[in-house]
Length: 580
Image 1: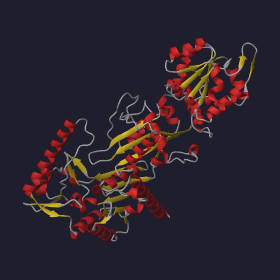
Image 2: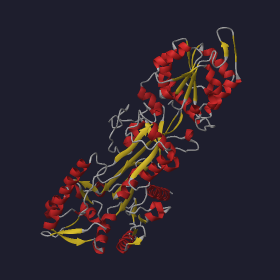
Image 3: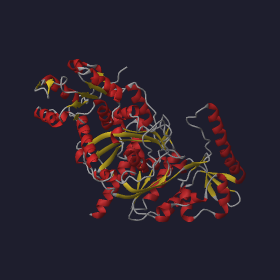
Image 4: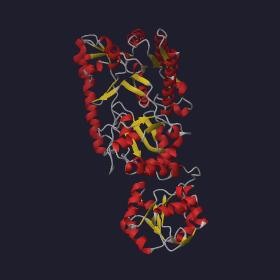
């Protein structure tokens, strides 16, 4: 079945108009003129591949007001087959989405020889082009797609004529990237990128071909708390390339992993895939199939900058310097989400979070571990701590040792559900999570069972140490928790703006209140009130609907994004007040 057409390439003599330039005259048809304009308003491009004099053709079409409706026009006296192949390569479309119209059968045969997948037709198709179901396109009366391809045309011409090397040309192009995290508003574009890109589609995890099902699939994925998703917008001095990439990564204690990562071929050769991959923290990426680039290439892409594009006036956008010096986070999954969003606007983001090591869940975000990072863990208990799965470096902190200026944020969710244990010989306390692991997306049942056995064995070893050498204490007491917070908050520079997230104090489908969590929140507020630069935040205030409250106690991805924006705006207000 023929594919929808995105580009119509045509001969002119005997096809676009009657007669030939060389034989003394042509009859220009307004009908064919109007068809070109109508196709452009459907987002379908028009081009020329003609044996003719370029200057003469440009003069005629400029006089008629149609020249600028053609992209990558190829007008000279060379054979058409190789020129068509080059034209399609330059415009970065798949040949199967290109229609070539010519009144000469030999030219059509030559086109098929050099570009086997191209669609061909003679001049009799012209009258019915607008009724052809393959040329329905989509409404683009603003001609944004035409503007994009004209910008691409200018860019390619300048690149070909540049006397400098390609890197110098890219640097002179002033390429800016903006990340739009509100993917739901542009869900159809995200689906199109996931399902239609190929050459720079690194994950190749297509959604359903049914539009409604695809929207449901993507929205279900984005509704969870642990994905981070964004659309990639690219602007340079040649114009706005629009949303030309999408990523969805999952944040886990074992490491972040890309679920979807794909970009349009319109940014091929610009280095965008490398820049964005670094921007989102170089998460685990399992490349599937053939691609034309490796995002993990260590080469430095220093010709792209981050920006906050104005969607209503993107062409006037300019690179936005990262105004935030640094963001320093210590906490669980919520801090991982916030830290990722700050990656596009801060010079430095440092996060210290819970981890999963050898299948053992280690709550390094617990307040007691934070205190140990400052005062030192009991030396005599270090060996049994290591036997549980901790490393000595887990009791060190870059945040507390450097004490950098900037934005600080804490969360202490681990304290209200991860119990403490006391080492029997030394009396030292340590938090330990007895959660047993599972395996997501196993390749085979046998592989999954084996992975679970290995993981459970490792956890079992740690639990054996726990049961033999430690005694159960329970959740952090009020006195200990407050003492831990004071030790940590004392390390926050007085001229830094700091935030501490309160814990969600109700759970389950019936919003069951959790009295002990309410107490922890009160204790946090008590201690935060002693510090002028530490502000407690209730994340539940950033939920806008029931869908933002997940049953596992987390919030949805959009709620965390709204929380990030609040922290960013409040910090900016404080900086402005200090400067004033």
